[in-house]
Image 1 (cartoon, rainbow, N blue to C red):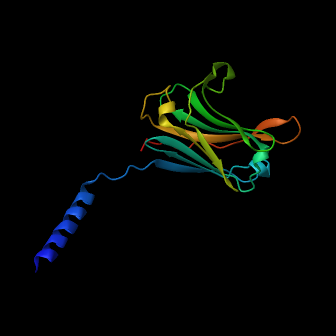
Image 2: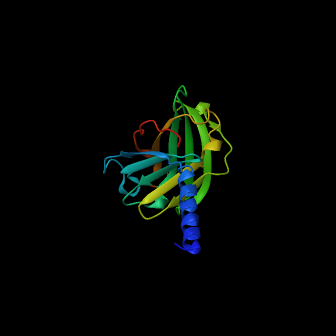
Image 3: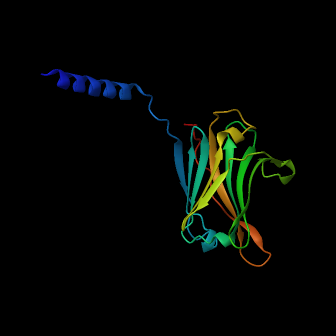
Length: 182
């Protein structure tokens, strides 16, 4: 073997060894909840919710096969931390009548009691929509009312516009199993 071949082999071996020593990328613990089709108006009928509890963000993806954003007045990702005593986070997207996002919010509420509602500051809420999916995510740093790293479970709901002046929370999924932060 010549010197050049030995140098190339040594360099490649070093690169492979260095790559092997890097820590593996963390991945979010994820679960899916399926919801029956036809239990809500088609425009807001959630058929699947996927929640991922990542290292830095909690992400919810709602599948709505016949989505019409203008019918979805408010969409919430509801997160329940383990041992929270009935308290839940509500990560929400409020849309105007044309379907455009008007506001993003984060709240903390006890057992669906509106009198216990506390608005929490958070500048990192994100949302996006495609033809069949609505996505909502919140940074873990905004979930300040529960200890960091605590397991949580999630569900989703949509406040639907089904007629002039008649809004109703017509669609709600069940909770995912408990998810570890990953």
